[in-house]
Image (tube, rainbow, N blue to C red; front, side, top):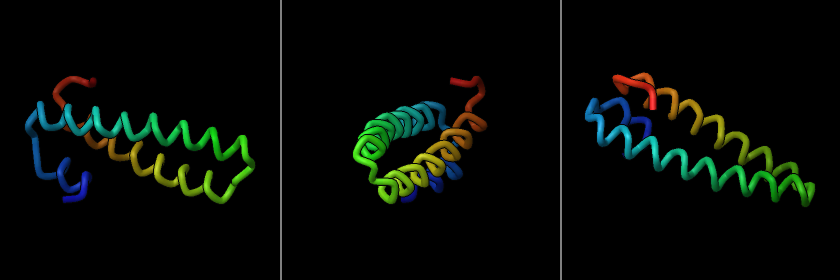
Length: 71
């Protein structure tokens, strides 16, 4: 199941918190890769990572909207 679908189909707080944690871990890894691509001037790869980060940011916002208190 797609992470976005998972968010849409649940209101279980522990599950949402787990999704949020996993999402933030992915973001951290992608920021590391993005930095590496900029250092090596691989702008095409950096663009792909930036697109992924936009998706993950939107996913995080969707999770936070469903949580009773912002995490």
